[in-house]
Length: 452
Image 1 (cartoon, helix red, strand yellow):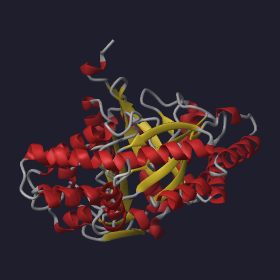
Image 2 (cartoon, rainbow, N blue to C red):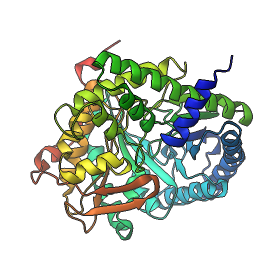
Image 3 (cartoon, rainbow, N blue to C red):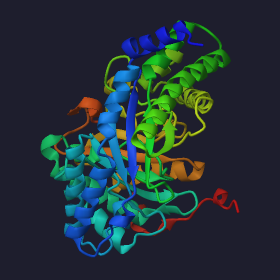
């Protein structure tokens, strides 16, 4: 039976509380595009992507109109390109990146992910050449996103790969310095990367996935914050219950969109990622949720505990709404994309060190962090290694999307616009770890990896 109060509640969530479907992402396998000739490879890649995703944007728009649910982003994720590049040289990989960008533009999607590699246990020749190509590939394209998985709980931490990625991040920042080093916003370094993540910049189409698949990412920080505000001074168990019930409603909407998109496109239904993904808009902030829970300002003592409770309650509520949970699922804390995080970082309440502590209990990691452009490579390497180690030791996904903003110092701002927002350049410890980094090799997998 249709419940009118439920309908009105959902309408209010959309109109007043920034409820939306953050992304509908189509995953496409490119394994059958492999060719010894890079021009033929690019031709096959372009043809397959544009054929498979031809109706992605129109269908998403149809669903928006029929159900009145905003779908903010339509995206594509492809097989990690290092796996199909074969003997391509660096120039060949840049040509593939341009092909992906051209296909994304033709289809009207905002991002295409998968220009990446999996190097958690070592870096093969193909992956090595792709990583070498990343700075220029992302600098000359608008929509291409890249991710590199450098660690896993099973394999340990590939410190050599992290050191190389630090160099590539610095180089990419320099190549896009005229745009506040925005290229780095399209590059993420992972531990324990999920193969069905619909969110950028880390989305790619995993090896165990169907030929084509639809994955949906939901959002709704404003809805959760409003529910907590209405609850007033209730106990923590009661508060957790309220968050769970709210997350259920948000995820149910994502499940509806996933089912409809899959049916209309005639492709496999994948997962619903039940993350709380913020935006720079007022009222759409994870930081403001934590403050509604009772923390004076995001970054104050108690922030990590509140975030842990929020993340857990979101997952518990979401799994009741769909049997197909995947991706990252939880609460995101990207500084530049969250109005409350921006305010907290600008005031000095939220430091890089506090953010690192928070990542131990949230969904991703150090995300959209701007740091001074003159930060040394070994310091960037250390920041990445610290974050990646949290993921490895805790058997969870963590990631780093960091922007060494060329020409900027602590206290300045980078301006990206749109969902990428703006961020204060955060101070970084002046102390490095060069001698540790230069030891090279792999940090062995933790004892908890031995589960067989």
